Image (tube, rainbow, N blue to C red; front, side):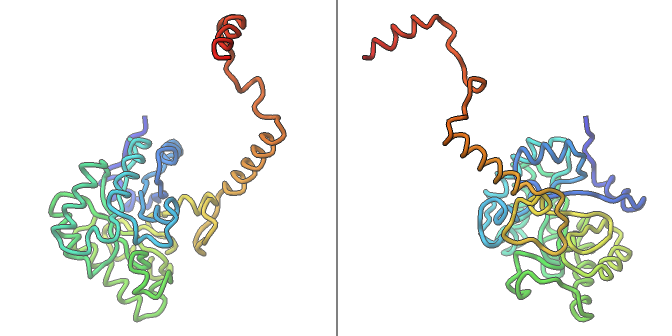
Length: 282
């Protein structure tokens, strides 16, 4: 049986320069596959809003949405470190609300830690949640929940002025007590500096080499075709395989070649008995 990693394992992996590989997962089957493959972590991201629920952003995703999907992923991957993503509205109001919602992730969905977006502006939230005994992963750079303020889904830290703020955010996350940090869509030069500067593990999604890499499962598998970020490497084309399978199924149903005798359950009593049964209803 696979042994689930602990926070100490991730800290040691940074010290030993062992990369952490993880993806998002939103359902039971993907969680099973991720654990079987040996993923170090699984993130139940609020990206489920676009990948699963069909929204045009992550903003409409609710606490109940996230908790439900976290529970499914935990059932599928009982021996994998799971991160619950705090949705928009779950921590923006007060420290107290942030703690209460973080507690729900731990109690109701049995995740190992929570993730929230922002650096300096959410420092008090991170501190309050960690003071409540809950592990927090920070998330800076391109933060989808506040993409409107960033001018859209745009890379961050590409000029000195903006990079300075990204670095300040990273330092604020660590100083507030987070155990790790995710950086999204930031130049690798900035990410490398932050990785050297921070004692906590630093992970990347579209931000170059650091202590580990995250990809959205639907992007890497070719399931989500509406938009694919530049930083995604597609490892499969499940969409094409699925559409082709659907087409073949439709054709066989219409041609009458499916189902065949191999796909049915036969009666277990003499046919005469069934003939008498059918006559009862004539």
